[in-house]
Amino acid sequence: MSAGIEEIAASLREARIAKALTQKALGQRVGLPQSHISKIENGAVDLKLSSLVEIARALGLEIKLVPRKALPAVEGAVRAHGTSVETSRALSLLNQQAQIAERIKANFPDLPQVDGFQNAIRSIPQLQFDAARLKALDEALKPAKRLTAIIEGQGGVAALAKRLEEATSALRHFRNMQVQHAPLIEAARQRPAYRLEEDDG
Image 1: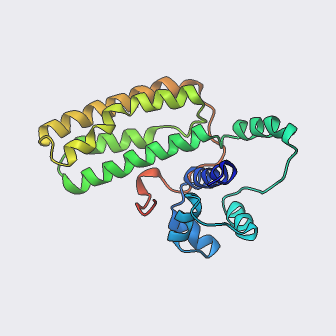
Image 2 (image 1 turned 60 degrees about the horizontal axis):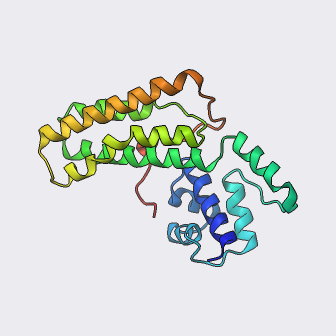
């Protein structure tokens, strides 16, 4: 896959995540199966121009050829609009943690700490992320990333409860540090992260 195709595929995936759409939901909008959307995002199919335009417009994007010399200015404008790679990556990270929280809730419905963790995820404001803020979020999610091992049997309920408390505390600290001086993303997510389906590849 060439660098140009890889970049377009990544941009489509990031735009879909930023709009809180699953691959299935995007496919329904443009009349394609989820499996085909997955192949497009992975650069595994030769995408027709007409399909590219249709998918881009379904994601609130436009296809435009620009002079190479103007590219830095265009990319700067895109970043300022809040659709940067960092913002999409941050939303993806939060969606992943929300799905983990749902798994914990399903497996341990009587564990009160999971509610606090879910609330902490939901309370993260819709920030416009730059590299520094994304790094801060990634750091805040470190305790949460260790939850998967415990769910898969490496520790008991007490260990899970403790990890959930640590993860919740870290997310609340991140929120408090960022919320004072954080520009909001212009386009609100269509659905909360914690309700995304898990059909994306």
